[in-house]
Amino acid sequence: MKEKGGKRRDPKRPPVRVSGELNFRTILVQMVSAAGTGYFFNTKRNRLRDKLVLRKHDPFVNKHVLFFEKRKIRSI
Image 1 (spheres, rainbow, N blue to C red):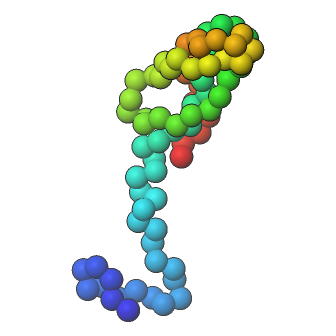
Image 2 (cartoon, rainbow, N blue to C red; image 1 turned 30 degrees about the vertical axis):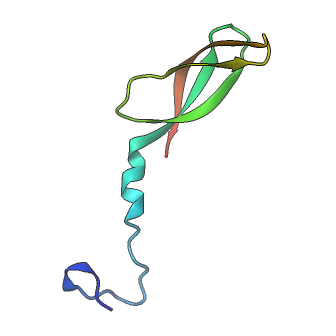
């Protein structure tokens, strides 16, 4: 079996996963409410981007408040 570049691949070995190469650009971060309620959610963002600040609904105070990025959870 031939792949790109005309190289032969060993049929016993699975092909290399190419689509996974770009996954290191995304990280999972924890967003914490600025209202001080302790409410948080997790979201993804680009690793090269600045820290996130979002305005979303906090169910504990039943209002829209700012959410600040607290910490990185893991790379995706």
